[in-house]
Length: 325
Image 1 (cartoon, rainbow, N blue to C red):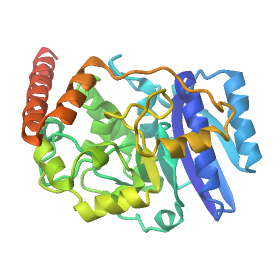
Image 2: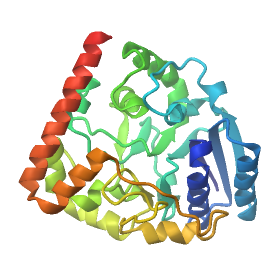
Image 3: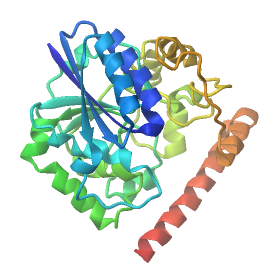
Image 4: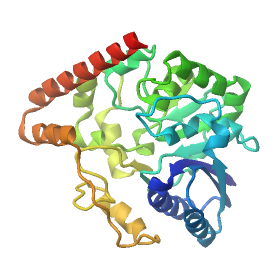
């Protein structure tokens, strides 16, 4: 059986991609074939060769696709890495009808077999719900009845994307926002795919807030109508399939001083990579440090008030931006 995987990267994230690939290959041995499609933007020949060597070591297939060639009609602001938009153009991979897209800042901790066997013929994507304030949900035309998903892990129905010309819909939506959609490509995916999204168990995209807060607290923080149960979050933490090292108060596992409870899993795969014993320097930004301090030293009610204030300020900034545009 063949498994199709996609990543999107530039030179800055090559090492994280390489470590993620190793974890992918080691935990999906039941697939006779794995094809990895890397949407890349000017990564060096040396980096390409390193990734090819990883793929060859596990007897898997690797193909590089130019981001510039895919995204010729894309016009966005410069506040966010364009490479994140690579997932919007997966429909141009014409020889396959289904693919799993992975963010590079990740570890695959389990098999994709059960997920790959799911019938998603009635859906555009299958993904895990994100912890996003309801303001952002409404800002892209959704309501609280929609469950906003995180785009770092996607099971994509490419056949349906092509049939319904989703790429054109993505571009048109981005243009409506003058290239500044709230939460960029993720907001675009949520807005266009909203009626055809299959919500997956959180084990397929274990994110930092799932460690920091209970299910009830997450619902309160982000004014969510629907979210996972605490039992579902506990199951995801006990047996994750995909660990997504999103921004949180732990820092990232490739940085010195990381306190993420699953950093040791990342380090185990790092030791099997060409970047063995090579950690980076990286610190939390000022706002994250402030919120971490409040989180660690205050009751939840105080943290919630601080979070609301930050969201209000971001909302005001976004509203001004829309008025300017």
